[in-house]
Image (cartoon, rainbow, N blue to C red):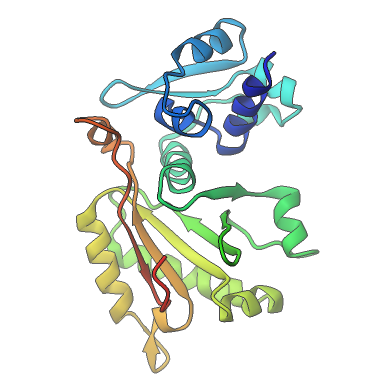
Length: 241
């Protein structure tokens, strides 16, 4: 197996799924990944499936999971919400202007020994490291329910003193990934007006709202010309990221 093949398999193991444009951006300098993907499928390491709009995605097979010594659950098919979450995190980490990395298990425990925060997380590495707790609501989840969930996550995170210190320094943040710009704008307005004590919720922590393709909108990202990069908006932080 080629070194790049192992990198691709580890990438899929971490993000659960991948897309051809993601692989071609990360590992092929924009060139086609078709032959390599076909070989990995023929050799039994990955399996392919379809999203709406006949967009293919790839996940590990049982052989691929065993090759990487990962839990066998990484080879099982996903429900709709899990697929929405994995797709959103993949795009958020790999297809934006800022590179991020999904963080879990041992890596997360090293940052917070003894009491790693719950939920899905991604780390952003730049001038300073920022850890995002990532929330990917369903496409029909009402905005008021999203805000209620974010408030709940904010209060749960603050229960741990080490997470609270990171949060106060804007190093622990909350990223919500939605599938349309209309929902982004609605959530942005709701976060600005959501009260928390005497101030809006966004004054207490860094909340980011970003548009990424969802199960319903993924075909639009592949519709015309180059694959589109999601628009991002940061709230509650003076920096432009």
